[in-house]
Image: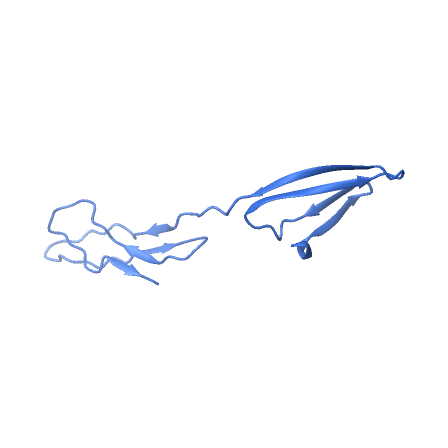
Length: 112
């Protein structure tokens, strides 16, 4: 990990370390030791907890509402989805209301 450590001299009295490009999930402890001109030292530690990135839910886009007039009695609905931090692996349509005669063909599609 030390090949990623970047030391930044902010002023003559402050030294900071930028770990933002190398940390992965976990708990880290870092110790800072300072030495004065007489050789005395002081130490302090800091604990950094890095949590995993949240899983942002995908967005399902079923499309615009559709109206048909009988005798037309079937339609094709094209839905899609996006995932900002991953990949859509499955699409599945489910009828949640309406007369019992309405059925879905090809309700699921795996993209694996």
